[in-house]
Image 1 (cartoon, helix red, strand yellow):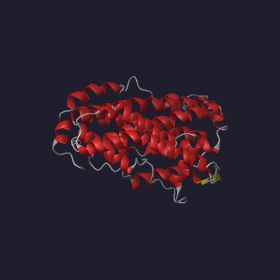
Image 2 (tube, one colour):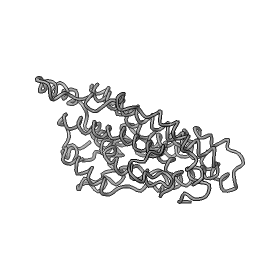
Image 3 (cartoon, helix red, strand yellow):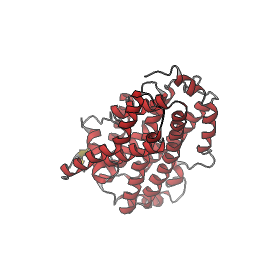
Length: 332
């Protein structure tokens, strides 16, 4: 079911009071960090020395870490696509662009917080001088032009399953890059990625809360949306990235992320299990026949993916080198 009719329309339109309670998870502008808090102050007289001190730890970053960092940054910079997606969910639309409804307040507040992520990572990479920023910028423009299709259509149920999954995946990725940055001696980058991961954790909580509420109101509709999206598999938001030279750029970036343990098939399996547990899917009762079958499928899915991930890991132990325009066509 791809439209917001019948029970779905009633559930979404009846959620505004609940959505209002979730706005507390957005931080005010006054209490939020800003990208400049993490970067050298170029207005100071000693700005040259500040930039040099900032760049020194980044010199120790491996090309592989730079690749996953660029890939994560490109993903964050495609934010306009994600806001457009959410505003397209039926019943969620911010019709005027400044609607006072709780749904609109959430979407704009979420976007405002997310916008800092790409800004900060972009400026960090620019100041380090370690990557080919033009190649990176070409990739960002291509991704925004290409868009992405997460198979949610305009269905808010599927949309909130997707955002719940994706916020957790993004949190995991940034946390793991933070760990790599620390191990390679860049404490600034560690702090940057940790701060972004903390934002993603708050956003994940809200989207999973939205979906938990939907499960309480319409368990059959909720579980079928979860089932449909898992059957289609979660599409990563940057899967259509292009740099004009590597036709397999996303696959190559994903392979590096897998090799470094930043985001792997095992993480995918664990996220499925986490959502099944968070939404208490195993203990839902009174489901229709089709929904009961979906329940069985979902409760076994994480284990199934974990086994597939183990097999794949054993088969692909050999690390392949791949060239990336982002790092001046060096191999990683």
